[in-house]
Amino acid sequence: MNDIFMNTYKRLPVTFARGEGAWLFDIKGKKYLDFGSGIAVNVLGHNYPPLVRAVTEQAAKYLHVCNYYMSDISEIFAEKLIEATSPAGMKKVFLGNSGAEANEGACKIARKYSLLKYGQGRHTIVTLNGSFHGRTITTLAATGQEKFHKDFGPFTDGFVHIQSGDIGALEKALDEKKVCGLLIEAVQGESGIVMQSQEYIAAAAKLCEDRDILLMFDEIQCGLGRTGTFLALEQYKDKSGNPIKADIVTLAKGLAGGIPAGAVLAGEKTCDVLQTGDHGSTFGANPVAAAAGLVVLKTVNDPEFLASVIHKGDILINALKEHHKVNEVRGKGLMIGFDIDSDAWPILEAGVARADNTKNMNGLLMLSAGQKTLRLLPPYTILDSEIDTGINILFELLDAS
Ligand SMILES: *Cc1c(COP(=O)(O)O)cnc(C)c1O
Image 1 (tube, rainbow, N blue to C red):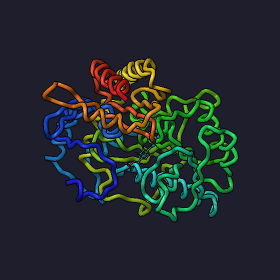
Image 2 (cartoon, protein in one colour):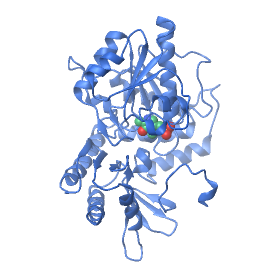
Image 3 (cartoon, protein in one colour):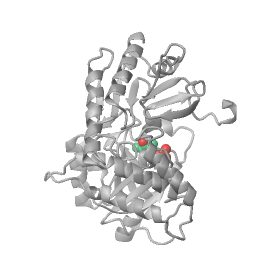
Image 4 (tube, rainbow, N blue to C red):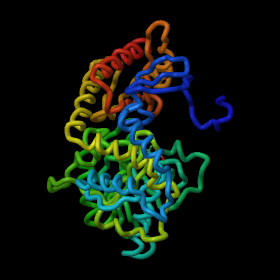
């Protein structure tokens, strides 16, 4: 079966057939605890009743209308999304289908903003080493990891990568004659859960403001409540101690809880840059995705719910710190990474191989990030007791490694 798919993914030997809460079941009925959420996508777990209801009800009404028209449900979704991101200064949204598409939109806005205001030549976008922004030719150009670039050049011009966390390098790279935007993940996901420091984000915000360079946050993995605030950037303050205001924020992955969706959000300075004919996407603002996204927003953007994400994350983080094979636990909320001395992939394999329904043994699904780093992104609806179950399995796997 695998032969008819292009060989783009290194896969584990399991085929899933259904899910329930934080659990997935394979075609043989074996059971696996999900500590990966399909890479930060299934934020409300599997088969979450309000989400299933919203999707099926919307599917029975209409699946799609083109962007010549408005859709009732997409309009409500967009309103809720602006409401949820208004603390970061967001005013308008463009809806698409994926993270790469959202970041492409962000780059287009940054380029046009600068062109209109300053003319040609100020088109460079600065990103950080270790970042991940997508797989298209332009978002690969933005991605600050060489391993993804091999074989696919030439890339879109005008991207510069700098050392993450180095304020001096940032100050030098943000040349106001050449640079239109800075694109950063407050918490880098793909490269192993690396949180930016308070000082770094504050310095970035100040430099961007002084030089009229757009401050753009890629919240595709770290946003949507993953770190305990709706956007991860809400946990940072500027130099005067005020909340960080972004010029652009991108979201995708968990935005519609498992239905493809992406969004570019823009603040005061940038929300009217794109005009009729400048941008588009056939499936953008899809009604089924909007119906699903509305459930995600209503559920996640709630102080009590967000506090529960921190609480669950703390259980996991504190437990991990106790294991002698866990070297450095990073992250916050349910976005956690840690290093081990051995390779991560065999641990993932052992987590899958452990499942055996004749012995009442369950598997554990995890993610890797690089060779020796494990990444845990459980669904927010996971129970405290299920986190304990997962920790026990994980420790057993680490002990045996
Ligand atoms: C996954 C990811 C992307 C790309 O999203 P796709 O939907 O796969 O295109 C971009 N940025 C970050 C931070 C991501 O984690």
